[in-house]
Length: 484
Image 1 (cartoon, rainbow, N blue to C red):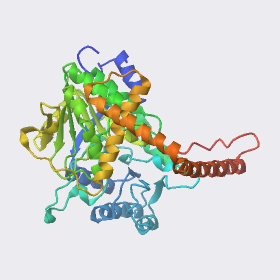
Image 2 (cartoon, rainbow, N blue to C red; image 1 turned 180 degrees about the vertical axis):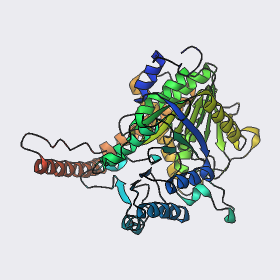
Image 3 (spheres, rainbow, N blue to C red; image 1 turned 120 degrees about the horizontal axis):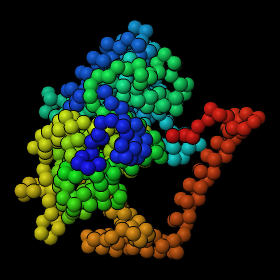
Image 4 (cartoon, one colour; image 1 turned 135 degrees about the vertical axis):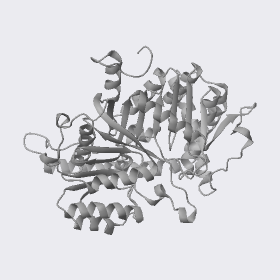
């Protein structure tokens, strides 16, 4: 690429191949894409599409709260199912842990086909780690929505109580790329049971062009790490600007180094994250633990002043943009099912930059004082997270920082900056304490480890017995697949 991240028209280029292979997603042209900001634009568009459905409704979302907003969507799903239109819904078990069983029973009784992703199982001790964090809606194979929003009252807020809505971003999509979103849903659906019926599958050639926007649909699965490879690549290729919005930032050493290298090379790198209104103070503390390294390299960091910033977006050189469900942390990059649209279009990129610039007017910039202490710009005081769980948050943040430092020493490759010297010392002390406990009171370490080994052993035996019962004479059941 010579001048920008945009892929030239015509035959596939080297840059197109690099992006396609890195993201595991091909470039689809001829689409219409529209930014939908917050619940006030997303929810009405979703409900209108559901109301107009004639062939099917496919909905996949991490959270459906059992509140007024959740009931509004439940009513829309049930009404459409009663009309005879197939409605299929996937929710994540952990994401919806506060939603009662009666909520799902009402949906099923009305004809909605509901499946839960990855409920806990005794034979999968670590199975709960993989989550379905996607947020998408596909209607009739004609329109799709890919977004960061879940379904709940907090996204609309409660104006009568003075509670502002959460800040979030989604997009509506028309054109051939809708088929790729539909395929992503079909993959999640088949992972939980029988596949979709043939009449609900969509082929790209059956969808007419709806615009001039090039789109990649990046559907990540546990272990695939599609965006974990793509995001550092974009940071490395950005020439002028790289503006990021993220709800739960906890960048790995590789990604943080990519951001720092871009900033040191003159790229305007900006990161917008939640401020005091974060719904998970623990993650906010982890994010703040990494500010100093970013700021020292010239990355500009901003904290949102509203109740919660839940968007996951990026825009580079006003030509490349990403909107979807993936956060900039290892859980999203590697552990979850995620879904994002990567858009390569100058008009869309400029609109994303304008939205980001507007968001900065409601944020506080974080800067370094002469002694390298992190503080808000202009002397503005930023309230710290509530004390509930505060010590745990500080401990987790410290553990993350120490772990990064230890990992860099073991790899013997990354250059250490002065700000990391203290972390190395803390890491050494932590390891010495663990060693001291092991020598003096070995049972404190042996008993938990032994119990964990017993649990894993029983889980493996249960799985082996189940496979033996279900295996065909000629070998393993071809229908079996790894748990996700």
